[in-house]
Image (cartoon, rainbow, N blue to C red; front, side, top):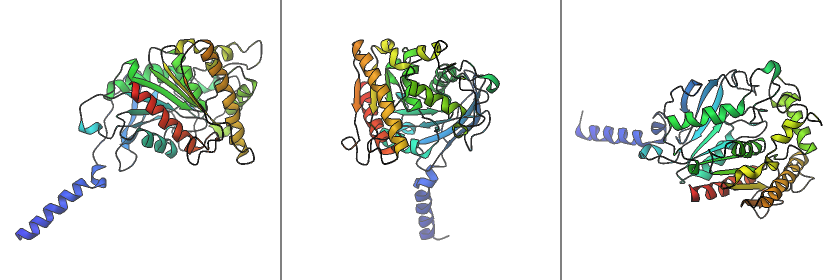
Length: 349
């Protein structure tokens, strides 16, 4: 082999090793079982950028979740987006938990886009756990034939310490945030109120926060009996019990809008539009308009408790972000929400 040929071959090899495709072959972190979770598939990168990976676990707290298309029985997908420099340092990072909405999923492409754009260059880990199409981030009171549906226990007592044990996270309250969209916005404030010892910041993007609201009760019970939320369906009283007085004590007790006192000392941020033009995508417009009403109740109760908070009430979205129309599942609106929330949290973490 000539010297010239050897030099060309060496240069080609170096270029191949530095290409995105070659970099993507480097393995993401491996996870060990623990805290009641069994790893059923090890992390794999979702694309050649090597920032986001997905893996799955099983848990006795929710052994048989209802399934959306493509989801596997007994397996819970968890998606993690790492900081750009995670593999280049040995330092630990703050972490945020992002809870998806209904009937969304943690591995939806739009959730990855929103998270990666908002966290680029921030030094922040984001974890998106499975919450089912209708899990409602709660321990169900009447799961019936569905079996245990202890989503709150799964996420707070298993996933969080499991992530801290397997990734280089800063495990202090001040360095942990929780945020979510729609059903996940409910879940984020619900979890923060139940476990203020875990979170330094909490945020809701268009969350349904008022469980005393009759429209919210109707919306939630509809998700339980609708096959589009996952199969099999469950009874309308499965999560919070009967939604009518005098049997609605759980609904009242679990309403984030009415139990804000435990958020004192935590950073709190609410984001909502008003639905914008009702003649365009009217279902998403109405959903956002009604979610806004629950945010207004929450804001009023935070003020009554003298708890500081941030509230982006951005109407039709025209002044919030390019392309945002103030509707419920508008990616441009949610992207702007996440950009702002990440900025708030990382300034304090």
